[in-house]
Image 1 (cartoon, one colour):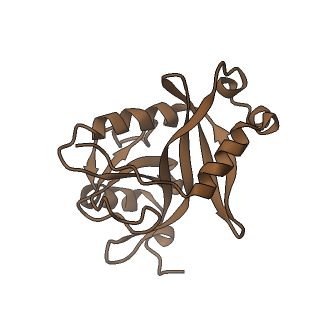
Image 2: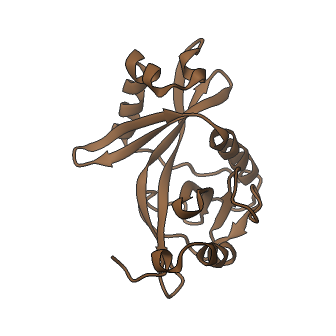
Image 3: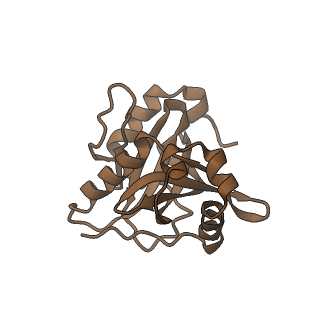
Length: 194
């Protein structure tokens, strides 16, 4: 079934479009693909980026929305990504980047399209493990900026994944979350709410 990609906040998209049209922003990004771009670069595939802050003693993952990520497409392929962040004044462009997570995200999304159930795609970052996952949220109508991974949601670790965790292998949250909590410093992830 097709993925239900949530719409990004309009100010987040506008900030990326403005950055793409700014020679200074593109030059300062130091992304060779954007610097040598032939033709128009377009932001596509907006995904909310959530950060795993901790896991409660009840085993619930506490996450927060950190930004929105857009793939920057030149022709028929994504060559970079743009990240936005929420500031006191609203959504703002943060930075451009390229690297393995761009292609890995696209691969994981293609894999997810073959799953029989519909999902809302999101990204879930686990900073303590230098890990990024495609989070396939089962509630396609949910506000993409809120919520926590449900036990039946899927997490697909993106490459490069931490040692011992296979990239591009889907895991139910209920299966992968215990593995992650054992690898992260217990006081950070299992501590009481801040």
